[in-house]
Length: 189
Image (cartoon, rainbow, N blue to C red):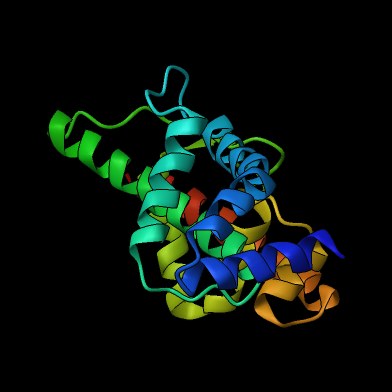
């Protein structure tokens, strides 16, 4: 059996109330979730208090408490990536409100996550992604799933029910838009 289809079956069984399915599912997905979390945290400031394990656990708890049905493995990981982004953004906004205007340390984006950007605040990045989502939700989703969720073009295509060629094209456009938006935000401040 394909490991992805096994995960899909276990996700459906878990959602149907089978607690044994969760016990079987956890070792199959945990390392992938840690890799997604590690990808996000590599972009965070040095000394960030959240660790990959804590981020995975928080995302998993929030997803478990939701009534979201998981269509398949790709859908589950897409939701997990979005949930982790939301947790980090909420954390960043909380830190910013605690500092009352003193600003949050910059987040360094690695692996050319945004063309031309060396570092960006997680809240600034989230605001830009939200603005992109309002203009073109699919492009925003592709950025989140590919760069922050660690999904390949094929996995991103599967999660969004589009072709890998569309992922490639939209990703290039989204990166250019995001890079420009973040650069514009910096020149305005």
